[in-house]
Length: 103
Image 1: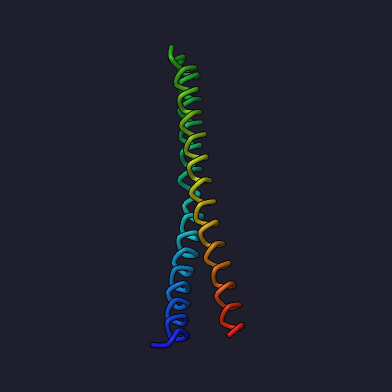
Image 2 (image 1 turned 180 degrees about the horizontal axis):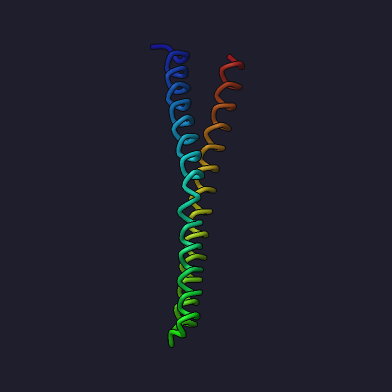
């Protein structure tokens, strides 16, 4: 096998990884409704607790706020992680194309 054949094989593998990451990023962004539903349910629970004068309503509100904040942070971190991996693969592809053109 020659180096060009191995290089083309690597390019095909990178293309498959790129497509998979693009699909993962798209499906991850479509799951935004999960975060929105957590916010909506938390808001509804807090309103009901204050409406019915639950004695621990303030503590529960703080806990729900922390859960919402944590879920948002985790969601954004995963989004950034997928974006960075996709960007790195695209940069590697450009480098490999540049190397192929040099030969």
